[in-house]
Image (cartoon, rainbow, N blue to C red):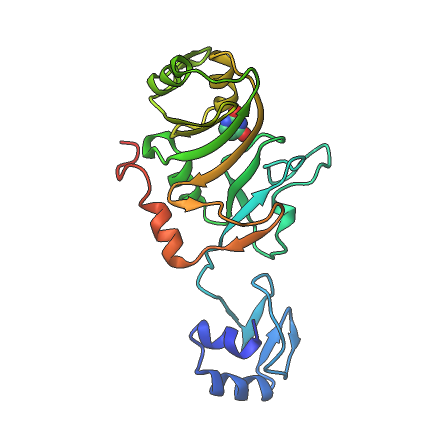
Length: 237
Ligand code: URA
């Protein structure tokens, strides 16, 4: 963002008046006087006016990313593998909302807003996540679909009822609102159809759409509002 706009949005003065303050040498960036109002500043730059720090209201950023296979969904990886965070060139401290396995592709959200991340991942909010699973040993029979819909007994307990549709003899669409580790793969294994390929196609109201693998886009405020109204209104009591 341009320095004059930075000062204006922080409430120091109007855009025009901010330009004059900058030209008058009253503004520093990282301790150095800057007289060019068009100078670009990032959220991480320390801006001061007459020696007083100027702070922006915290910027909330939420991105939708199409995670490719081979990319981990943690903020850092001790093994040095590519992370979803590294796909977005941003000065903000972004982290993934929940996890996808390294070989799972599809929609993952990144944000710098911890409260929002909690709202979207805590099981009590029941935000639905939709997956396409291509499975082995086709065809998937009605009995398997019914078992997945009812819930299956996994080693960490019974799964909640799921919405399940067969799209092709080897492809099913599942919508779950829990977020247990490897949940979809374990559910499919349980009914005799280990997963060959898993793609997350929707998170709450938000769809992956035609976002290409590795691509990202910033969500609009309206999209973020819609996301936060996904699932149950009440959180943990
Ligand atoms: N379920 C899985 O098994 N893996 C994922 O990555 C997401 C949901």
